[in-house]
Image (tube, rainbow, N blue to C red; front, side, top):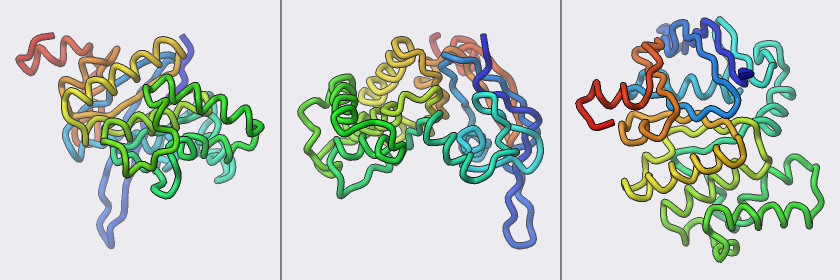
Length: 240
């Protein structure tokens, strides 16, 4: 299958005063279209940095990151913005919803930025996604009126409204209880199956890894290995 993400010897260093802090140390990774991949590792292992590079939020210090066949190092800021807007959807652990907008308006926002659809077309797509994530009756609510799980569902709908090829989720269940978190992962998995959208999500939670097709493990900014969820569970003494 075709790779939608290709990372080659990616290094990312951050400078804090006179100190250089290495966040990634030569990571190489391919992600094929339609994958449902977990990036696992403890805090500080480089998970969020790797997602930021794949999501064109940042660029590597050295090495390369290709997304949908485009080398992010060679793109202008405008081209990186276009790639984020038209190819990638983001789901943040803190939801990042706009508090003054309704649920429907939050979901519609990326479509307004794209400027490709008419008002009725946008409304139809938002309505369909509200139905899909089980929030049909909450379109006029504000984020503050929703539970954590409901807000995460809004975030998922917003990430999917542009029909991106790739969705990145940074610790998508971190602020949710275990039951709600499992429902969110089930929803993402269903959308992966039905829409063929590629999902890459970061986690340090073994129960979240169990939903993935494969688990890529990071430690100290390096890629340790790529295993099945069953292998990862067995090594931690948990049932597969």
